[in-house]
Length: 151
Image 1 (tube, rainbow, N blue to C red):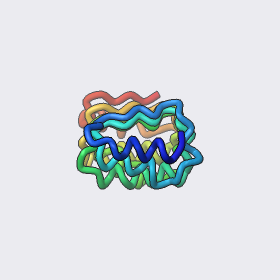
Image 2: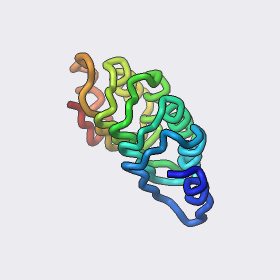
Image 3: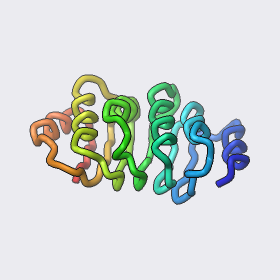
C-alpha cells in the first residue's frame, strides 16, 4: 500500500467502510491509517503489519472518532500498547476484533475493567492472553458486553 493510494481512500467522499486486511501498512506514515478512523464507520486492518506507533495513533483516533463503530486490528502485535489507551479505545466502539494480537493479562484486565465503568461494546473478540485473567472480572464483563469471546 502506498501513501498515495491511502490518501485517495481518505479523499473518497462516500466511503463508510474500508478493508485493508492483509495489506502491509508498516511503511506508511503513522498518522495516515489513523486518519481513516475519523471519517469511517468500519475499518478492518487484520494482519496489516502495523507498527507500535501506528497502533498508538489508531487507538488515539478511535477514542476521538464520532463515526467509527467497528474496528478489526487482529493479527497485529498489540502487546506493547499501553493498557489504558487500549481499554479506552476498545470500549468506545461497538464491535472490536483483536484476536492473535499477543495481548497481555494487564491489557485484557484493563479492557474488561473499563467495560464495567463505561462501554459502547456489543461484541468483543480477543484471542489468547499471556497470563491468567481474573475469572470474576470476565464473568462481570460478560453481563455488560453482549458477545464477549476470550480464549
